Image 1 (cartoon, rainbow, N blue to C red):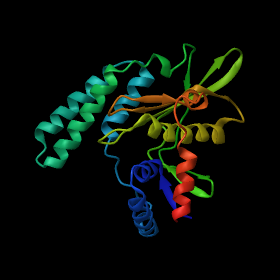
Image 2: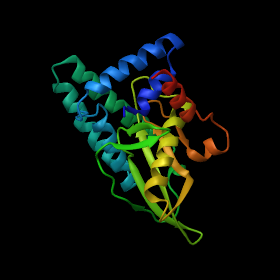
Image 3: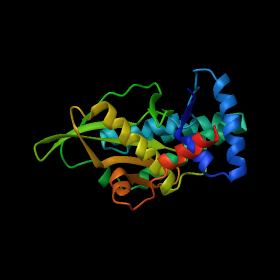
Image 4: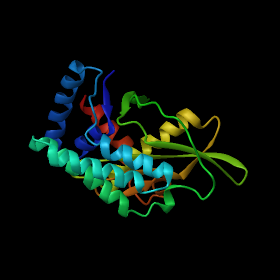
Length: 227
């Protein structure tokens, strides 16, 4: 069975009808010959500092990483490396300015360990790869109930719209349900996806309330119809 990522789905959704067909054909060819090694993520330097900052509830990890990236930028020879370092600096700057109060409850939270390998789940007979893996999963007690929430920091050079972030949020919510619903109540208000390039973010409760169009399942079905 073919494996696609949420970013693949976003790319597909942005295309014209004609280019969607071409994209699916090319995607199938690529997937059939691709290896299991996904390489190093372009945004690792910035996102890892953001994760550390959230967990420590401090901006210091961001300041430290930014200083490191500036030194790497100054010493880099190749233009592509300089661009990568600069864009990781940019996502650190963006995150530093965001209001993060609604991303964690006021109650004490406990962080769960997350596998660094890409998680794959089957949805509507299509294997969906979570790449990168969810950034943070944490538990807390609210009104006498053990609850769980999660954060997924995502990025690409041109950012994501709210509807596109909703696709990531849908998958994050499914991930929490598959792996934790037997032990915890999934708190939709703390199931959050953040675009660290543009500063947009969304939680699953917004999808449930109909504030943002749910595009995930319709996109899967459109891809399936062309495969």
